[in-house]
Image (tube, rainbow, N blue to C red):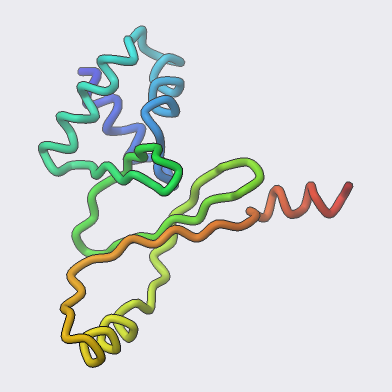
Length: 126
C-alpha cells in the first residue's frame, strides 16, 4: 500500500520532510502522483501517526508524531536543510512566564536559523 510506503519513508528519516521530498523518494521505487502523496499524508495526519508542522518559511514538513517528547527545528540559511533537536529548556521559561503573567504555557514551537556544519565547512574553504 502506498500510504504504508510513505509512512516508512517518514519513519526512517532523521529530519522532517516536505511533501516534495517524500514524493521524490517514493518515485525511486513506486509510480505515484503527487496528489496521492498529499492524500496519504493527510490520512496519516488524521490518524495521528505523523504530524504536519508549518515552519516560518510557510512550508509544511512531516514527521512522526512522538507524544513522549517534542522537537525543535534547526534550519540552515545556506542550503535550507532542516534538522530536529530534542534539546529544550523551555520548562524554566514557562515557569517564569506563569509567575510573571499568570499565563499557562501548554505548547510551543521554536525554529533556530543558522548555518549547518556542511555549509560552514564549505564556506570556510572559499
